[in-house]
Length: 125
Image 1 (cartoon, rainbow, N blue to C red):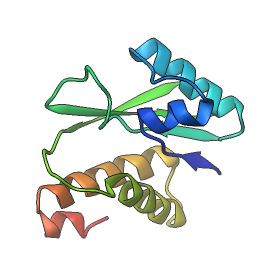
Image 2 (cartoon, rainbow, N blue to C red):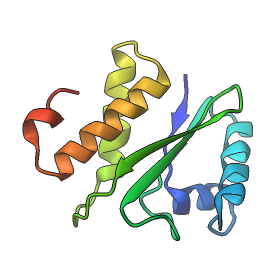
Image 3 (spheres, rainbow, N blue to C red):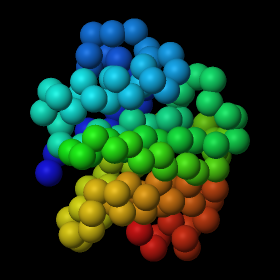
Image 4 (cartoon, rainbow, N blue to C red):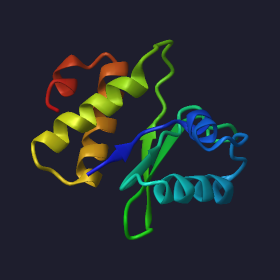
């Protein structure tokens, strides 16, 4: 299983394109990344412009072509490395044998808890 986890800016750079404006363009970029060989693509929505300020929407595309929208409350925190932490948390979940969707959901919850300073919830990954 291969999964890539770019944010919207990184996805555009991987494809040599400008940042996607709007969901249809973002979905086309996800499909293009999938066509390049990634079995699954999770585009992180934290850097997305025009998104509701109180919600982050990560989008997951897998082999069947269906896009799952994973919504989480936005946590306003000046932190670097959350994308790398998210990818690591997903990898940890996949190593436990859960599905890609379950791994992404658990990792998203973990990162949110860590950003909110809820160490007990964050430890239950």
